[in-house]
Image (cartoon, rainbow, N blue to C red; front, side, top):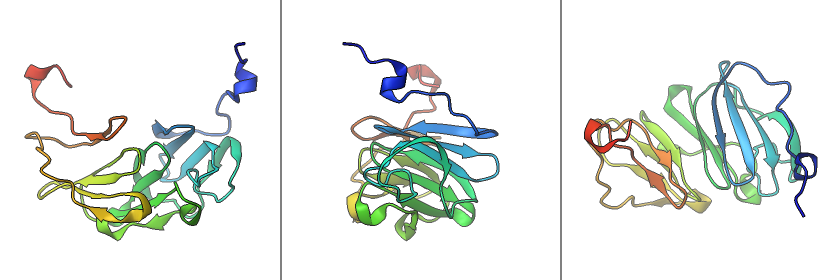
Length: 171
C-alpha cells in the first residue's frame, strides 16, 4: 500500500530559519543558513549528515564545526561546503568520513558541485578539479567548459556545467 507522510518520515523542517540554499541527496537534506551554518537531516547511516550519528535524524541538526560556509553541494551520499578562505570541507559517504574534513585538493576560488561520489570545483581559470570516493583525486578528463560557465550542477550520474548561452534554452 501507500505509506503516509508520517510513515515515510516526511515532516516540516521546524527550527530552521534564514536559509540561503537548500539541497537534497539520495535520502538527506542540508540547508545553508545566512550565518554560514549548515543544518542537515534525513539518513545518516553513511555519514552524510556530518554529525557522526549513524542513524536517521528527523529534524534539522547543525553540522558541528561548520559556521563559515559560503556554498553548499549535496550529492547522492555526501555533502560538501565551500568555506571562507576558499577551503572545502566534505563528509560522507563512508564511516571514516562521517564528520567534516578538509579537502585541500579542491581549495581555491570557484564553484563547487557534487555528483554521486565525486566532488568537483570549477575554478575561474584552469581545469575542473575533482575527487572521488575516499577523497582520491581523479582527472576530470577533457571537460568542455562553456564560455561564461559559473556553476556546477548535480546531474544524477554526474556533474553538469550549464551553458550561459541564451540560444540553448538553459538559463
